[in-house]
Every structure is written in structure tokens, then in C-alpha cells.
Image (cartoon, rainbow over all chains, first blue to last red; front, top):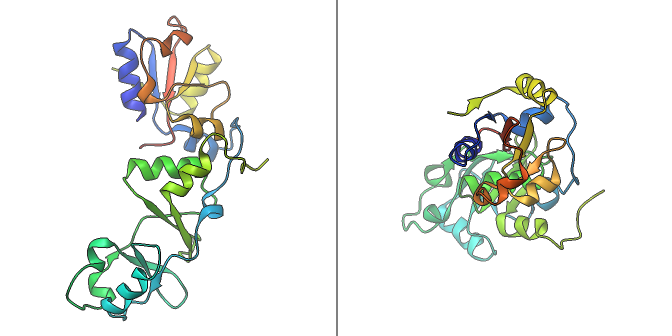
Length: 163
Length: 67
């Protein structure tokens, strides 16, 4: 995003334009100060009611479980709740009754619970994700953040920011 | 062509009077931004919004990371 902004500034007549491509993630990681009003983090909005299934389950059984929920995706976990994969909408509507292992998309992108919600929303928008899987650093499922709920939480007028 | 800079170079430019512009959305800026940074979201970057900037000084733009 910043390379496009830098180029745009040049087209607007600015001659001394620099692009700090590593951005505020790099700044914060170096322990340098940041200003602002600390908002909620991903873990606070991660919903634990997202459906889960195991590798050896049959797709039809999982589909019935997902249809009975308000979700359209199912996370594949092991006995320790480490996230192994994901069954998306396309996999869940397959007619053939495969095992979860055969139908899943392995290794979904995950986020840590301490990620700022604003940064998470930006990342989800950039990747066209409507939901984000939140795990601990050792891969265990914390829950799933829905983009619509995260956006609502960040909307002006929301009174849920922490001091 | 804009020049890509790293953190050390950003700090040196700031010492020399450079301006910082975060181009993320307002809600992300309000959560966290570099000290003293302006906020002009990329989609709002036009002639009117850049009037707040001093054209004689360097401008450093940034977002969250390499996205």
C-alpha cells in the first residue's frame, strides 16, 4: 500500500518522497514508541463457537454440523486443538462423502491473539478474508474473528476500547 | 521514483525535519501510529488532503507492513 501512496505523492508534485516499507509493524517490533488509543486485540473478538472437526470424520457429518450453526466454514483440528486445515464453503457443498482430510485446505493463515484488531482488519481486507483464525503461538485454536464483527467493533461510536 | 528506506533511515530523516504520513484507514491510525504522523488514507490521497503537508520537506509514507 505505501509504495502506491509514495508514487501518488510524486504525481501530486512532491519531490522528496520516501517509502518506509516495513511500516509500523517494524517500528513497534524494534521497541520504538507508538502513539494512539490502544484498541481491542484479536483474541477479544475470537469466537470459540466456530465449528471444528477431526481429520478422520466424514464430510456429510461435518456438513450437518456446520449447517446447524451460523457458520459456513469448519476448522480441522487435532486432539490437542492444533489447527491443521479448514473446510470452506466449496468443500462443504461437495456431494461425494470424502474424509475431512481429503477435502480440507491445509495450513490456513492464522493470527495471534495479541494482534491489534485494526491491523487484523487491514490484513483481512487486503486478503479478501471474511474470517480469521486465531491461534496461540503453538498452533492451538483460540477462535475465529469475523470481519463484520471486527469492523463493527472498530466503528466510530463503539465504546469498547480499552484504556 | 520514491526511495525505499529502513528504520534507521526514517529516524535520520525525522531528525532532519521529515514528515510522516500513515496511509492506512483512520481506525487503524487511531489505534497506533508513529509519533507525529499525519493520517491520509490511500483512498483519500488527493490534492486537497496533501495541502496539510510542507512540500519543501521530505515526506515518509508508511502502512502496517509489506502489504
